[in-house]
Length: 181
Image (tube, rainbow, N blue to C red; front, side, top):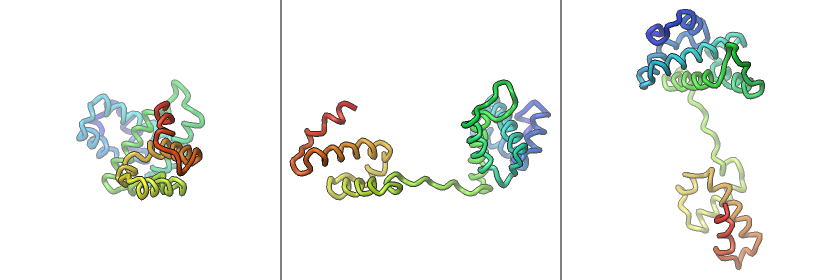
């Protein structure tokens, strides 16, 4: 029950009347079950109240929680937060993320779409990835595991290597490039 986690009756009322009101008791219990300390639970729930107040003000409903999260995040990044005034802030956005995760775990909200891998998004990177696997003997798992790091540094090395002399260049030609990074 929400009152077990929050002392303020006003905050409890704000939470119950907002778009997340139907799930707020279970969410508070979920936070406790996950080992969240009492002070952290209280901060999360108070921050949640600021976010749900904003959602209500902007006419978002329980169906639009993810869209409301994105809209709030965009507004905060563009306009910032007015200090010493009630409203969403960084803590509110973290609380909203936790609520969305909770609702996805419970099957209330659809699972998030997985972002495309870099080699799927950019054809040149896909060709480079395939070349590394087929011609250089690098395991596919290696290329998948750290795509954020290999994609840039390895692509730069490969482009330098091809620009210098594709047939005559040895490893020593471009080792200095990585050593200086």
